Image (cartoon, rainbow, N blue to C red; front, side):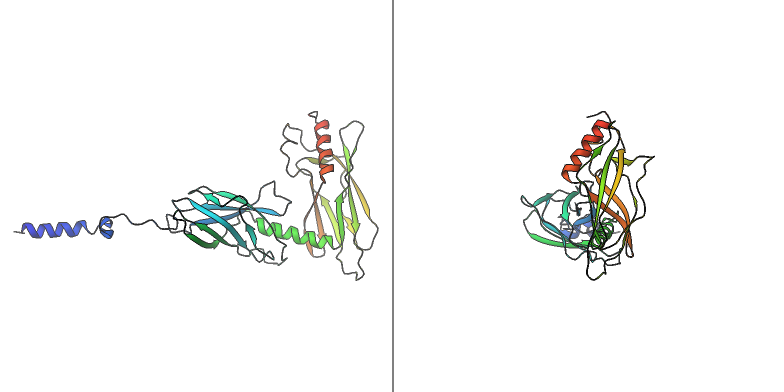
Amino acid sequence: MVSRSWRYVVALAAVCFLPACEHAGQAPAPSPAGSHGETPISVEVNQSRDQYGKQAILIQLTNNTEANLTVSDAVLRSNLFRGDITWRPEGGALNLPPKQPKSLPATLPAASCLSASDAPITATIHYTDPAREPKTTSTDASDPFNVLPRNSDELCLSAEAAATATIVLDPGLEVAPDGATAVVRLVITPVGTSSGTAPGLTIESIDETTLLAEVPDDPWPRSVTVAANTAPQVVPLRIRPARCDPHAVAEDKVGTLLPLRVTVGDRKGLLKVAASTELRGRIYDFVSTACGTG
């Protein structure tokens, strides 16, 4: 027969194989990383409509821990750009609650114009934990919408185009007598160079915007060529409202940003020409009146 004392030892051993015996009856201390061992703060790149055309992006941070963290800065590095992409708070450090993403605006530096569009993005975050202990985490940032490659391409295209010509929208707007259409003018001024090394530029086509569309019987021009040391060109574009719902003007973010599909040397892409503040107001007035909402 097994003695009572031996049965007690066996029972005690069985109980102490449980995880709770690992720390003499105390629960394991929480890890500073996330619940599954991931980095304490994960990083994603995004871009809002407000930032489109402003050379700015959003750095989205997600706190993977179970405690509030306080972020003092966030820095992204990619060889697509010549410098760091940095966010720093303007009014004190950022409180980052658990599992609640927060998006932080950051201005893009000059593009490096390298060919590697799949370049890795590294992120460095400086923060403090609830004990006010300064910490740093470094991790790869995700870019699911290819925000950095797209912006890098557009910045490089814009720089190459500027070497050939300046392209702006004239601040004036010529509204038709019936108020249904108007004419906005694209002013192209070639750059004079003594070396003659500026690449040629061709405006292959012009895209409509969320606010402005071409008039079917007066389509916008295609294949407009520009060369350095030539006379300026003025390209008239007859426009009509692209939409007339009540929110067309009130919620507009990019409707007065005219996208040109251009070829500059060996590079192709979108070159965005922004309306001045004066022209933007005139376009809003035109659309409101043409749609009967003004």
